[in-house]
Length: 95
Image (tube, rainbow, N blue to C red):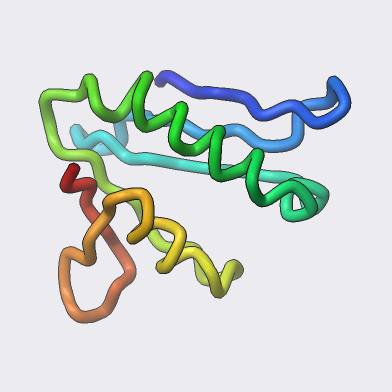
């Protein structure tokens, strides 16, 4: 597993990266509610994770779309993930 931590005022606020799950690379993100108050920092941290971790992967990277965050599909698409099927529950990184 490789991850990047976003700190706000010196406190860990979000964590994102890639881990192996059932032989596949899976992108993940977990954040505290206060992370939503710094959307630009969250975006920059996500781009940093892509550059440092995901772009170096020689195998596909998947992401499961969160049911709890309505903006998750648009956020993942903006990062370069595309839906695997019509359900839009799983996406794959294509950049």
